[in-house]
Image (spheres, rainbow, N blue to C red):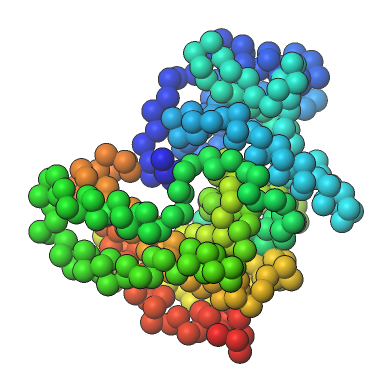
Length: 379
């Protein structure tokens, strides 16, 4: 399944009694008070804040969406392994692991998650105080801060054995597989919509070989398999409320084996586009090469030391392919009847796909410059 803010997620509602029962399973150092109001902007899991009775400390309590993440125990093994590794790196660098990575609270029985009577899976974290989440790129400084924080996250995990991680969502960024799924939907044409999108179909068909570029580079040993976050939206970086510096990367549910180009590319797809993802007027869609450069320089300032020239070059391809892949997925859902991504109007997924394809076209036009930015004089 796809992990995306547009996805329509249905889970059983959380009552205060269910929440309190789950909270009682964790080792919070004493009784806690619960508030049944959801916390934050997340669309996938149910997130709540709980307090110690004396209000001395608060925690995050989450019910994991097991429709999206079918192996919550494996997911938490990933999270615990990665955060344990990060804590050791942060301590060695003289940092503060209480703020610079997520810290998992175990259950009273020592487990990483709690399974309730209804089969729901719960986990808890320390609350990282005095931080904010940005919901959009407000300035170049914001975007560079996010880039530096994500680059540092990758660099700190460069020696983590990626192959030991569970794949929490199968074939998540397998672009050739996304292309194959599109071809199946096109052949079926369940709603007779293909006749309305001939130019979009031609656009995808013309880029079939592009879909293979990154995985072919991996297979050839040109770029390494890494630990990747796979959901590098700007709001998954905590920013220090006082200093404006990036503190911590959060939302580690999709941490899996992958390519650095995936994380870099998805950030560019969402951050270097100065209009809404579902903008119906394609004349307003604009890929901002300057913001791409801002992000690239920030990212490479913290991640670049562990990257080869070939891997740096792959980052530009990541921007193109993550954008193309997303557009293919939107158009596939349009052909299949809009069952996957939530829509608010007719042709909503078609508008989303067209926006992604417009961005791809614009990236292609300046691709030599994109390569030069990430790999000067070696593209």
